[in-house]
Image 1 (cartoon, helix red, strand yellow):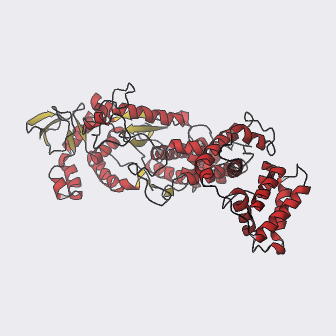
Image 2 (tube, helix red, strand yellow):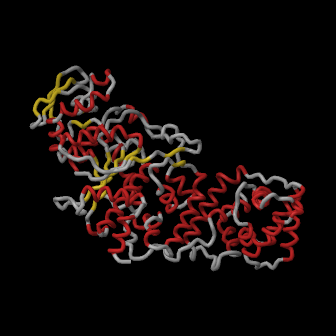
Image 3 (cartoon, one colour):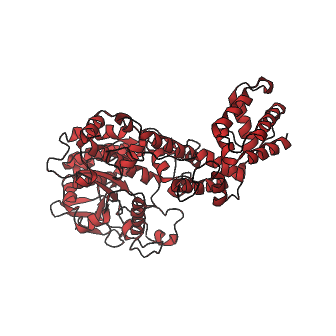
Length: 544
């Protein structure tokens, strides 16, 4: 595949990252800004809490669009045609003390001060609460190999690099008020100001009316918390901006071309878009994505604690599967709970195995193509992961581990894998070995505590005896396909009265595995071993 082939295929691809990248190409038909500077992608982070899956998905999805745009213009990541900025709004005032933070009294004593000017309650040697969380963000992004530039609001405000943009906000103060005041409740209008001064006496971010005294000099006037009238500069870190104004100012100051955001910020995006136009800038391109839901279909909330953390996903699944699960249509809500992990792992590997044999247009619609390319690991000359495959499905691995019980260990699992996997050595199958560990954890925490194997009915017991009779005569090395064929044949026998094969397999799953769903039984029997499988049947018949 040549670069020309890739460009042509990318320009007609219906995959959502390419559709988003096409919007950027309409913004800059030549594939570059008029001044030759890189196309700027941005993601935002509020460091009042630690980074989470929401942070991950926004950086990942933005990266996918960034790489898709590079493909459209025939650029490589190292060409420097694009930039990705991870921006931390660490000048924001702390509104409330987050849950599960050590030394909460430190935060309580510093409420409403900028996050970057509050001592670190974690006491890890960072200069502030925000610095601690910013470090965690960078550690988190680096862990997943994202290519980005980190920018903190604290540095931009304090160094004066935002001063020119702040002067423009002061010049346009009334125009911004005209945009914002109609959107506010009457009570809020009385105190609203685009500029939030920082009190010279308490160091807090103040929500008070502000008079612009001299926009060019950056001078403002306001009433401090002690009732005194104060004139001071709004520049050099002595003020910050209201959220929607701050967002627009950032777009204007940095020249942001693309930023996506959640559905909950739809109205903010509208107002900030109007404000950046008043400032003389242009609203970035970007999509509005749907939020994650819990297993009950309710919106995930940090305060409710009904979400799923990155650490939890990686305890029970793989990094690849997390990106794969997040990839499909960002405009559709997704349930995010541990129950979706096993399917995500297996679906990822199915798409990965398929990729090498697909024509180019199908590759560009395959999530794995985008995930491999996301951080520069694949330039498009050949399909990534060619020949890669998982020798057993994660679902089958979970069934094996559940049968072995809550006390199963890694070495025991690998001894059974020797029945099914050629060269069953963890060193030869590192990806599978990772999944052995996650399967053990998943079984321990979610399967074993609730495992119930029901007793078979009379006709089910008769079918199980027939299966046992067959296995008693079968050679120990019978293939999974031959075993599967015989399982089918037994289920189709009229004497056992199954209306369809689905009922037969459901009986096998519920009586032998304690589950409503399960693997191809031929594969399971080959993996677990014929004699061990006969023991499972005997235990089920004892319950009849």
